[in-house]
Length: 254
Image (cartoon, rainbow, N blue to C red):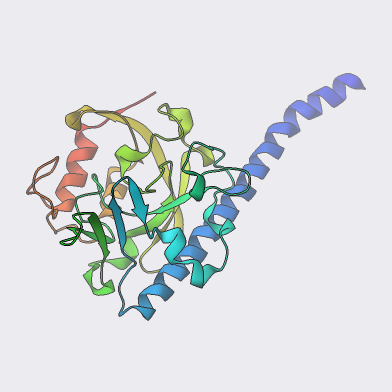
């Protein structure tokens, strides 16, 4: 009898673990959908324009989890049930000291390129970096542009691949079995298979990116638009071309 119970346990425990993970992933998908609704509600209240963020003097101002509070009236929705890291700024934690789970799409590859849901600018008054929310009319294909989703970043919280190092720099840092939840500017949400890479073409030992090179294009507000900053990887190229070059130049980490 004991042997039979042991065999059944060996069979069922992995099934239970998979079921629990599936439940957490469903919760995560629900969270990003609700957050996307709040982004779009914000845009409707502000002339169809996404929220803006500011960074300077070692502090990040008015991040999405603060700006969207009037629309969600809850902070718990910003926490992914699978993200257990506590290595984040104190103001960004829940009662269990966990890091936030989601972040807006600052664009492919660098958060400074201005080809995600933000334009990249410099405040003429204080010199701080500004990420000015795009107008909804700026998005060439809203159903194909990521709005926000699962992040491993802290503490500015972006989806830029080279910032995804806060939870570790090995393939095991990817949660949800590597299937991250993302939402899109048109409001729908889906999971995308993520994978760890090195990207020595720009000097990075660890980047977390979509496994499909085609999915990299989903970081672009417009695949035909050129990045707004001068210099850096992909300077002078369209966002779609940069995505294709990243897919070509990256090296998978085992």
